[in-house]
Length: 382
Image (cartoon, rainbow, N blue to C red; front, side):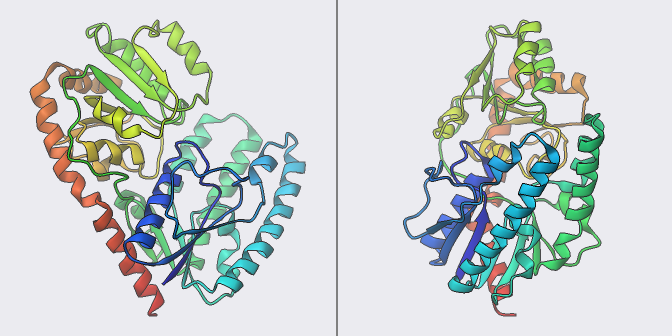
């Protein structure tokens, strides 16, 4: 079977979705013997941050949406974007007519606008890595710009229409599926574990870990406020943040809360497994996600987790009180208490670690990729 994946770039450093697609494509090519082609728009001759199989072919269309997005004038940017879409559709149509794939997958990037209209004989799958519907109201509350509000509303109305044009619409969580009850083509397939290891984390390490962009979207501002209340009682513990700094005002907050002595910020790294294994607790305070790869990474290693119940992901991954703690949104007091309880008790960390490791098996690569294999075969045999 021949599969084509569409994605912006695989050269993005530390990108969760990029890691997922490379891992899935590698499994399809190396284990299930699929013919796999990756089609990108913004690779710019960059080397893939995560290595993919030599069996996989890579085609870059050289559209460069990233450069267009930096255009300062909105109306000029919009005009350039519409021209880029035309170029993109023409180039992708040429590729699909030549390749004659069985299945073509959109990762909900720009090709989602027109992929379903290309008559190349393939089945079309739209794959969503974000919880679109609950995310929009959060974004609306956080912006004062009329133009930005209009863009968010347009995107919500427009993108909620697109799934019906595809043969299948794949979301990552049961929680997200509940927002699409009006659609009859929705399937839930979670992301697979990015790695599987028998080694448990160093549960004696006095390190609390959080991986992801240093941004307000990831709720790092909330996490710093929490840590300011925790570190007073635990001066020998460290909060380790791994990711690129997006919102520089968070560094100002770090200084204002006088946390520079207990918070470490480290750049994204390819050897992320080592970071999980060197920590004893994982925390997450994002405002919205799809299905965070970092939660899967944490449970695959056996890290107990404390997380807000943001949409979507934590409820599908964490069994509250068993392998971690789920805390209601913005309940800072309870988050602090749950985190402290784990920091105090090594026995509790050990118990939750074992449970996390056991429960992570439902996200194993084999289990998840068998679901994809079943879906692709179902579509091909229609």
